[in-house]
Image 1: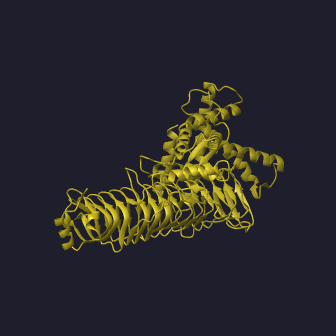
Image 2: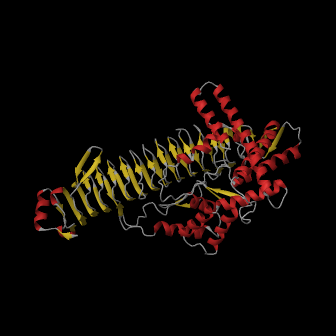
Image 3: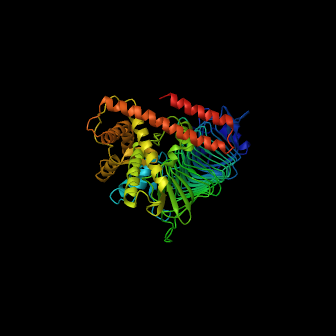
Length: 609
């Protein structure tokens, strides 16, 4: 950089430019003053070269330069086009090749952290914060924070680690990366904007970070108001969405006037029209409808029906109650769930459910409420077209940038975590039948009801699920030897990451004793656990097979019998799904060609056995 020459100053003044002190304006060696017009300079300003054109929209390229703007303590990179700034740009460093047009105010105030390090209170709307947000937050790190926020021996250390990570290396003033486009936006205050991000028509960005990777930026569209929030690479926030104190993860979409407060969204979540408050939305959480409200809940691979609602005022002591809908759950149109509640994996909630169910040990269930009672149909969702389609579609809908992914998303649907719940569910149903009588018309499960036929069918579905799991897990293994005992007990689903509970407990212990002292170390440890998933899953499978076959040592013959039983179980499963599809087709709304295509997919899956 160099100082302006007298000739350049004179030319700038002839072009309507002013400066408090021309000596405080520095420029690139090949700076061309003819491309700067009607600009007021205040404080320290540095300008790059303006020797190329900038594509402002498809088919329109304008020469780089600055016109009709006020700059105060600003650095501008090479070949930017900055024009028609109605207010001012103050305390910003702007990268190369940017297009900034029609901005009202763009400024940085002293001491800002750009939305990073904010503590969000999810699940418990009225409680203390339990997730520290920052650029690069992963779903598994957020889940670990939420799960351990009540642990006084872990949370203070964890919060300090996360806050230190969030605020380390933050710039003293706002930055706009290279290749950024900001147009027709009224207010950008205390906001970091990464490379290749685009902001078009937003109303207000205040105390925010817009992240990017070498592969992707993020997009903020018209009429958006976003405050105290972090938006990740590949995400879009558009069409009048309103976010306050939120984290938006990789490839998430927030739009159509959706409003969210104190909520986090991860990995391909899609939110339109409705609301979220104190919600933990893990990977592939979807809500499309105007009357849907996600509040005080934890969700993952979840689909909210229209007018879905949750109530977190169960005992009228305030909005303090929370619920969990485990992986793959759905709510039907008009569903209402009174929290606290916990719904098992791949379950469907219908109607008004006020009995605070806990069905974590009854996955694949239907929960049907009429306000006065809640009926559970255990295991029924295992053999539906919806479950078949859901588990097949998620991997193909992962739109995150290929490189630099933060959240771990394990798509294994019939995992040890689910199989463990199925095992417990089967034992639960057997115990209910034994204790309440085999001929009972209904069975009481907590405050809910299971009909006799539903219980007996549930036992059949859970046995089918276990046969499927064992065959899938044993496929390709030529040894019945486990790799140790890790994974043979309880498992947990950490917002997309599947892990033995003992391994997560060990991570908490290492935070307590100081062996893990940074967020980087925590993330690496969690990644190592994920990398050992296949090994831990095999350990769990060996334990299950040994118990079911009554042997301490699995032989090749045992594994062949498991494989044969798996093929039989698979055909039972697909036959039940085929029957469910035929029932739907009989309703008359499904086109015959679509039905034929689905049946062809089922037949192809059968032939692969």
